[in-house]
Image (cartoon, rainbow, N blue to C red; front, side, top):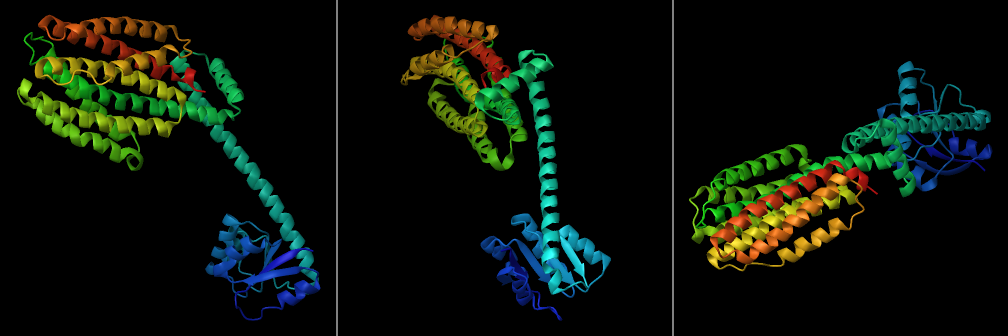
Length: 417
């Protein structure tokens, strides 16, 4: 037995809809007013909504539109109002049968069938339109992802498409979903790289400040320190501009606040006595930069970005280790807190990756060789010659990790699973 929900509007001349529907073999599952129509439709799930309104107006059309948006059903509207504007408004709202001066108990079932047929046709058309929109959106995503792959891995267009299709098959996803992952990886990859740079710079700045206090003065230190300050400013500005303010703005600000204090401390003449205070400020910057980087990686939810994060963290650890050795020699502060072990663990992780990129393999090998030299130099941190060697080798190791991170960022699509 078909079912109907009656919408009462309180208008004059309303027919006995409930009695006439029951006589026509239609089960009346309830009556509702405009305010509660959606709730009653969801609760009773009628086959059709039947309405009589002598003067249909905005309240009725808004109620019908909410049903169309939330719980679509065929809707029949009986009315003596022949106004063309009302007919247009009713059609736009989602009325499937607008019957003017045509109420007749004998016609109730045929009119219901008409509304149901039009409703089914509308649903099919909406599904077809949604599918077309989905395909168009997917094609746009695929084109963008192909462009990223072509640039990152030097692929031809057909090779890039084949890579996306293969990844979709292996992960049992639509090619559009895989394409979105590639696009997100590219977008978040740069942000993670920059946030990771902030971690590294917090440690490098203290290392360079400490080198100004060493017996052997390296002429390039002042320039490197100035460049590092400028790099922090540039990375913060780019992250503030490129990341979503509601999502990440507080995290970027949390880095900027302690950075402002550290920047002020670095302007004062270098002195060994001030090193602990400068280092404490740098640790605040590091902690907040770590928080930002971790949240970016979580937001992206891509394996490749964890790889970039690990490589970027190696940059920071290389500078942290050199900083700790110099601070220990100059102030007697604890020289090591597990940084070397963490650096070794990062090497092990990167070396275990299924890397197919020859350039990445070569850069990782160079970084490993340089790390061996740094480790040997750390044993002589108490001498001026050892400090000079630590300074130069730590910058060389940083260069290798910088290059490795950049290569991984450009080729990260190869690691997207």
